[in-house]
Amino acid sequence: MDGLTKEELAKLVAQMDAEELRIRAVAGTADSPVVAPTQREHLDDGEVADEKTVQRQGDAMLKHYRMQLADIEAARSRMRSGQYGVCIDCQQAIRFARLQAYPTATRCTACQNLHEHRHPRQAQETRRPASTDLSSPD
Ligand SMILES: [Zn+2]
Image (tube, rainbow, N blue to C red; front, side, top):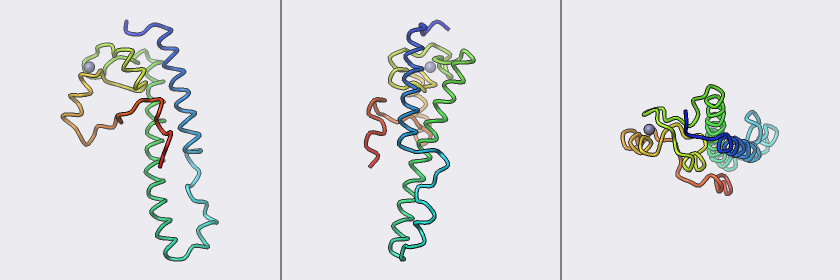
């Protein structure tokens, strides 16, 4: 592949490392429950209902974080195998500017747009600048 220089790749590696740290800081360790079991015993019915809502939202957030961490892990795996930065649909190099915005991107902009058009419900790439992600979870 001829899309990325070593310097560009190093920047993206650092960016993913920083993103992983930020996700882990917000999400905690993947195995820790959102609400500690000991806290649940003192809730009345109304609070239990509230807690279930919170639990559901927490589960959705954790799922989202885990997906992001899995994306980062997959991107690192592609780096090791030399597949990183290559569009999985058209096999063309993904532009560095796009990778800076989405270090875990697996498609070039054109193919991603096509993919989202064809599979709108499966489109998982969120539209946001990487630098503001997770800054305000609520
Ligand atoms: Zn493509």
